[in-house]
Length: 254
Image (cartoon, rainbow, N blue to C red; front, side):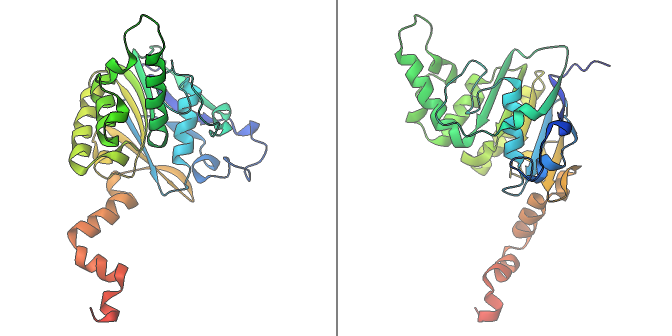
């Protein structure tokens, strides 16, 4: 059956990998990748720092045609050549329909994207300003959280394929809840998301699959079984006990 979602699975072309001891193939999320089935609406990839989740997400975005530093497929700027060659070793299974919209967001290079938008808008073209699609105000003249929120609310137009790398990085808990609502709104407008996150708030979205990267590889789990949820839950339920353990206050008699 031909899938109607924009991307239905990601597969590693393992037979083309020369060595799984070399980067990025040594990363747990890559070494044991095999085939990753994607949810028609929202797929989360979670895991500890260094597990390879962001490297995998970047490869998916680049293989789809997005600029490695973020943006739409129309952006082609290159501030620093830092992405891995993993995109050459994965295969995306695409559906019969193409998205009307699309965006690759990565928190670490969003500043570079904002700079590129200002650079392009300074060039005479006769076309509308690019920044008008992002709320009309320079992204550099807003906080990181405000500029990301302008992106989500103004630039994301629905019926899109959105690849987001740790979008919660600049958001307060309240804004993470608002982002959850916005994701739901866009998902109901025939959009598909792939998101890496450390946020138990975001990964609680019910119409989604959660994949956890660990030393053993990558496997689908319930979000309440993720380490992120369990650590946050234990801390919120009994912060004093957790602080006693972390700060060893009982031994010091504090």
